Image (cartoon, helix red, strand yellow):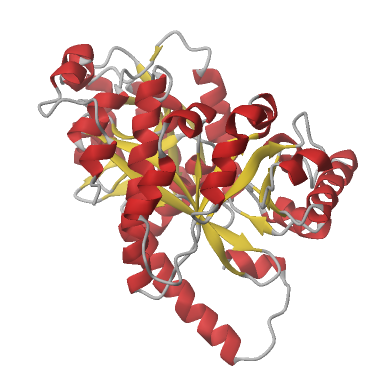
Length: 438
């Protein structure tokens, strides 16, 4: 029987190679600037924190939740975010005290007050922030519109890309694997017609001792091909293990992971699956996602491997379908079971008639090859409704559910299972798209 260690070969037991290569990333050094595309959400109301965090996740950025000013100032000793969302009343503290901590650390990012207090009081607190030489954005009242949070975060992150004070994180992937900092987060995929779970999409996160949660966009920047292969090995083994936990609560969803052509060509995935895949009859297998242009370019390289993996319950999905090479011939030759619509086209589906028609055309093309279609990164109800009208089968994104670690996923699936039982016992299931987000 193979274990995780066998498939993560090449990293020494004490992690000395990785540690030597990235001593700087493990040391607790004082940050030199702002961490790109990051924010702190400081509010003693958990629901408010979760809503803002979901918006930040949907923008492909990282957020850290906290309930008190003390937590904020402690976190600032590790790294400084681009943006801080903050209520006036905090657990065991308040915004005025927190401003002093920010000023003492010469915080150079932006502060966004979000409060339900009287506007005059909020204005007075806002003025104190300015007096402490902080960059104070115009306050937002509670209850707030989600679109307002999104617009503010987008604006700050775009400015962040050109800021002279920002710094990149140096998080070494090999060291993260060796130290056990890698974990999988899962985002539910929702069947738009049946209004139920259609599967999961797994992606890695680093839970860094200094930086908190680090997204792939940061730790994959400098990752070598061997490191990326080791990560994919880890992900496959983790999904196989964690699926057993999901099954214990009565859920057995099929999980999709993004895989590189290099990993398909060089890893012995068939051997891994023979040794490790569950023996239960309800094991649904994997979905391996390949970017469309990579699949086209390297089709001959992976044709044989892809056919072999299908023996073990692996199906394939083309990601960013419609970005360039879409054809019925490709779908049929590659025996694709699913395609993910180009995120650029799907994002404009509700805004542009041309994008809507293009989405509809891509959906029809996929259906003609008996492939399902998925719309990713769906941010709002309008985009969700537009995708539904095109005939798109599946959706995922912050409007439905954000990515979450396994403990949170287990709670989510238990609640959804109870809701589904109530729906089914109540009679017919109406295809109302807006009920999917409830």
